[in-house]
Length: 418
Image 1: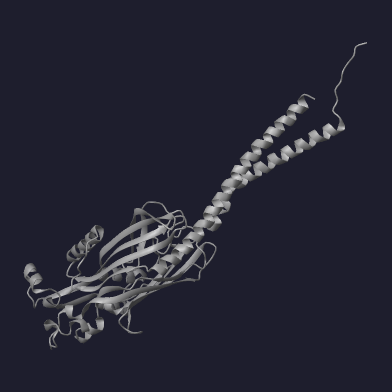
Image 2: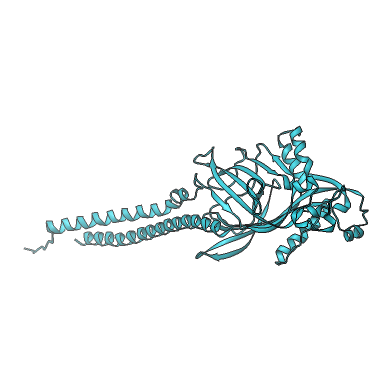
């Protein structure tokens, strides 16, 4: 009789093998689930953090800085400002005084902006209303107000772009600048109060409320601050013919009304050339002192912003503003070009003492920058933590899959040899 040896698993071994196989397959399923979560999270979870909050806003204030300013009240009364009361050319006279008599060379100026959320506010859109006041520090309220502007725009909460279907508006009252404008409803293009999440090192269209146009803002540098890098963008706008710019803005909704035409009257002033130009300038240009010249208001700005790229929050802003008079677009562009060259080279720029309406460097004060950075770093940290968590979950999923596959193969191998 042959002796046949049969090896059978004991019940305990069978249960152990079955349990090991179940655990291995469960671990494999868990690993696959973790990997799926890691793959889908960038599309499902991260977008929930990359959205402009409905309560976006807050105060922004610039450092008080000395600036040149045309005093509209002094000009209308033909009375020199205090700084020039003892100047021989500004002595009381029945004739019209030179424009330099009404222009202060070092008026303390500060910009204050309050940003509030308004309706409509939805899952997709947020409406921001920015009220900006330029005030002088040498006068008490309400006589200290140089200009007040209210800008309302509805932004896409994900792209930070203005929505073309939801209209924006802009109103400004600035007697010293000859501006009394209400654009009504209009569609705008270009970034303004926010940049997109994951801001790139490239040029963006940026809307200028004074010019009422969008212009390219170019990436210029990466700046190391607060333990991370902000992206610096720069933009030069001008020379902008304010008579043409305001006329175009007011015509968006049709023909000019009587109120619209009244708003344009202070944007061009006709007076003898001697009021606007020095004797040397008159001689160089061959202009008679008594020749009537029409001077138009122009605007230029050298703008710098820094953006925390992860959140798109602007953490620094500086507008070097230059409002002035010129006889022609060509003359105005020469002034603007000289201004931009001085900014690019870091040189001092000397505005005309006869033809400047406003010249000031409006740079965010430290408190405003700190608040912006607090908001940016909060969003930055939340995004980085979520991205790290997704990375950990994905890595853990891969490891669990690898380990479970090893145990599955061992289990199958034991079954095959049993």
